[in-house]
Length: 167
Length: 167
Length: 167
Picture 1 (tube, rainbow over the protein chains, first blue to last red):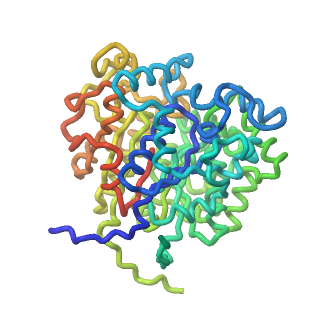
Picture 2: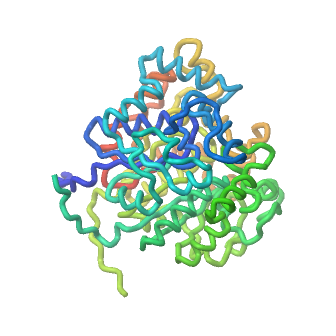
Picture 3: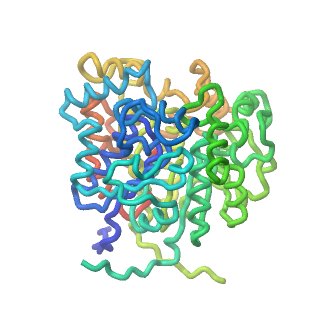
């Protein structure tokens, strides 16, 4: 049976990702999907929430984020891209280094390069309002590429008629 | 270039979530997305499976669920909303408390409030037949808001033409 | 109010899953969704990446995969279906066995049976090019059912107009 000719609505070429995880390997997945899609013309929307906010903080490294004591406790563990743990095999923090080494050795873009590529490809960065409230993170703590701080409803509306992933 | 006026099919305003995780932060994500979407008129379908079933058990607290010895082993670790661990930083079980504190302090709804809001907003709760079999959980162990115990195929059919997430 | 008769575009009955996790319970979820959808006529596309590649390796068991020293380190921990850990309660590796026991006892298909069923139902298996590069895995290391080694963009294109999940 022949597949009928499909006329795609232009709005369907859209990929939206809710970036919840702060794990190194999952962040690599987020940015690989984002840059892969953007490079073939997709509109890509990344909505960072909870641990994922770690990927779009200005201040990288294990330093406190936000105001007050408790956000600090989280800040110390949310160390940004350089110290993001791997979701699975994280033997004493060595795994991300092995990954980086393998990525470099095999000429695959590293996480930082993927993030830079996403910026260059005009991937849209958004941050989750509620998670920022909970974790005590302000707009000024985030990289300038973050277009807007949004609530869930706005993000879902923006993602309609495309593919939406939770990572 | 002006974006063309898009007439949405009414069926597209639909959010369906496969709630697989029993982690506190991921459950907060499930119910934040569910209530956020429902409050702007989406039809929301939550399909709880595996550890996610923990969120819709009647009997909360670390008590055995289901019949037989082995389900008990799991039941003790599946302690319901009050004892759900955080997916990442769970230092000796303290993290969910910190989260709760931060949520309270910053006037964000707590997990229990989000679940109540989901009920009030008529979010649809479904439970996964297969996972209930595996874990020895019966319909009578689940909150009355659970509309139906479903298989995968029925849930996917119900989710068509909307956004579907696996959390 | 009567629900209007909806004429589905044939292309919408499609389920695509990015299989990122190598955890036992999440692999059970991937294959339960895949076989459930395929059995009611969905086109199902599985795209294995990172730890998920473990599910489609020929050589099962804790043995090194790929060439070179560092991939070996990962290979030892990526032990295939028989040794896949459970995402949550993995007390000394006993949990997958408990799961298997419960699945068997309650007449639910085991993971291996689900994988076989997926093959029989002509679920499409794809492998992620970039992850294979990083982890030093070649096409020859994968089961023959893997139709193609793909990049992200090709997979997203293939998944359009269906439901796409990241697991």
